Image 1: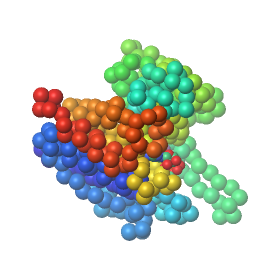
Image 2: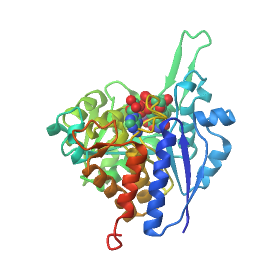
Image 3: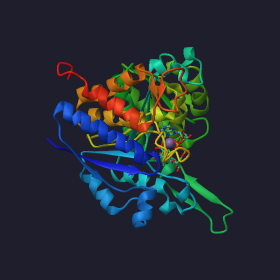
Image 4: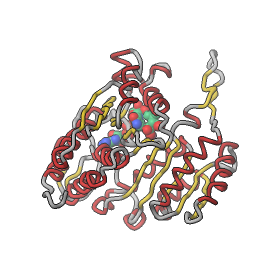
Length: 362
Ligand code: NAD
Ligand code: IPM
Ligand code: MN
């Protein structure tokens, strides 16, 4: 059956990497005899410029009707001084909220060829393979009040959670751990924050339902340190929205580049938004040099999670692996030897990898 995919390129390198995703999907469609329909919509700064809002109603409607959504990135210096409701980032937050995508899954697994691309020692990053399960529709990002006083002398943001919001993300994390190495680290700031105390309480309650999963609590400050000094101790990390945002960019260092990290933003049914962890990268936008792998691997996550196309997802992941084996890499990956390529070339190599699979493989 035809799958309806909404494409939200957004801003900066988002435009470039979503094009890569589309080419990869075309190769998958061809190779596995699927039909994908694409509808491109505006979001973020591009939407502010065209429609005066970062999340136009037509985009929202299209997303609600889609089988899955691919998003590039939003934001950029052009809109940085806009009032909050006209900031590109607001469009992405509204999209996540509108679709109820409360769980953001950020897998971090180093490719062996890229071990030396990390500024960390190879023996530290070797073997790291973790999943950050980030709460995505609550916490500091959505709490009210969130405002500055008229005289700009005081300001407030609110970190609020309903018990139910904590329960569902913790359940998602336990379920994810069950499918992996069965170890869950819950990261909080329970030595200071009330929200973290309830978070910890919920994790403790839920663990009775998952006796096969070992559970550990860590405070976010030391967890940030352990993530880059002893990353192999982690399997699944579950954490509040903002902690998860920060820790995942930090964890990208294990892979050699932020341009490598994919993510899936999901709810309990199959609908999902697939987005690289990185942003619009204004410093390299428009130059055609962005690393498309985070976006391409997000596309693989879409195939697997929203369409149950496991073989197809593996085909994408294997093609990426193969391209790296050949030594092809974009400029953000500081690796010795190999050949430096641009976004289009990298995409072409991945597409060729998919297309050259012989029928018996697929
Ligand atoms: P960023 O992730 O855009 O860039 C951080 C650094 O990583 C930059 O040096 C950039 O060149 C590099 N980088 C990121 N993606 C890359 C890729 N695919 N290939 C090669 N290098 C890559 O973070 P920032 O500079 O702090 O933010 C820029 C804008 O992006 C801001 O407006 C921010 O709000 C927005 N942002 C959006 C998202 C999103 O849409 N999901 C995520 C993060 C940041
Ligand atoms: C991310 C981004 C977003 C977030 C911004 C752009 C709102 O940093 O997806 O990680 O903080 O969630
Ligand atoms: Mn982020």
